[in-house]
Amino acid sequence: MSKHAAINPKNGAGAWGVVALGFMTLALAFTVRGSLSLAMPVWQSEFGWSRGFISGIAAVALLVMAVVAPFAGGLVDRRGSRPLLIFGLAAIGLGVALVAIAQPGVTAWLLPIGFAGIGAIGFGTIAQHVVAAAIAQRVEQNRGLAVGIGTAGSTAGQLLLMPVLAFFMQSGEWRTPFLLLALACFLLIPVTWRALSSRGPTSTAGDQLHGEADGRKGLRSDLGTLLRSPVFHAIFWSYTICGFTTSGVIETHLMPYASLCGFGPVPSAAAYGVLSALNLAGMIAAGWLSDRVHRPLLLAFIYTARAGAFFLLLFVADNYPLLIIFAIVFGLFDYSTVPVTASYLASRLGIRVLGLSMGLLSAGHAVGGAAGAWAGGAVFDWSGGYGVLWTASIGLAVIAALLVVALGDNERTIRRIPATA
Image 1 (cartoon, rainbow, N blue to C red):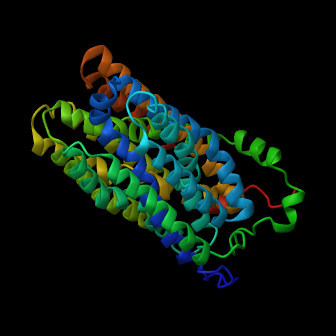
Image 2 (cartoon, helix red, strand yellow; image 1 turned 90 degrees about the vertical axis):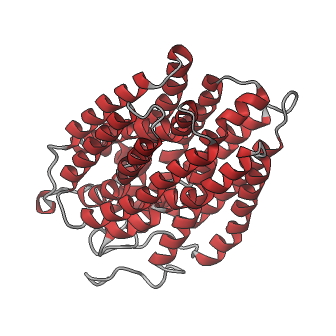
Image 3 (cartoon, one colour; image 1 turned 30 degrees about the vertical axis):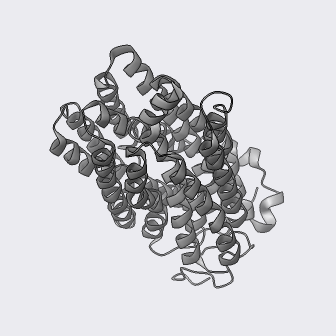
């Protein structure tokens, strides 16, 4: 492949087909994930569950994702993205359908099984690391920008669909939008099948994928090399903290906190929509910057800015404009770590193990998210508020910044994991 080639024409719809499909599937997956936060007050009333119990459902879902993520990452290295995206869409569609038909009493168990069981397997499969790895394997020029656009679907769907969900839930009707989300997942399966080739990942000029070497370089060896890398550990633990402060704390507890402050479902969803809109812009901008600036310093800046956003959240009370300001600031730095991290690991450790390395990071992110989701519910049940949670999140975000700030980013001195033993 030419040094300047960005797309291999043998890959079905090509690199940008993966970008488009990744965008759409992430839009659906993350809308379903975010729906729990919006539905929490409704489920408390209808099923008689505590906020801590519903937060536990979110935490279990994130733990299931943590188990699935490394396997999904390894499979995308070896099998390509099409089978993973199709399987994930089917799992999410079935899980959401079970949530929608759950009724108080004898069938209430279908809701946690659908969301934290079957649906969570789909969330772990259709995840940012799978899409990021699939794109990075096909795009060499402007890799960070391409990853940023593709993974931005994780916020674009919430931006468009969360207000619709809020409109239904304001009247107490939450099952219809969940059934529509399930239908959308099933309809996207044949589109994915037709649009993506069954071929696996392609080679790039910067790092030949393993192909023939696959049999000679085992998963155990790759995993051992990653676990011995100080760079990987710094990124992994910062990414675990990232999960606590985003998937765990904000995705699960921001809208319940807004409700606690006296804002209704629609204003709360509107604030979340603002966050999602800025998240979309932040991911694309971070991807663009990751092709041009020192990436560890960019990550440290993102984590520091996130800490500042949590500081604002301490003073929201009944001040809706301040909630919107928080949504703007946090939105810019919410998922913006994804394209920067994928771009950095691709050049630092190599494309060949990017799916595995991002899968391990995603597992850590999910464990951190589970801790944040559980902690938020426990803190609320204990104190009746979220102040302790916001304060802890400030400190953790600062720690994440300190973990990455000293990493190097000079590709001329980087030793990648080799393609052969």
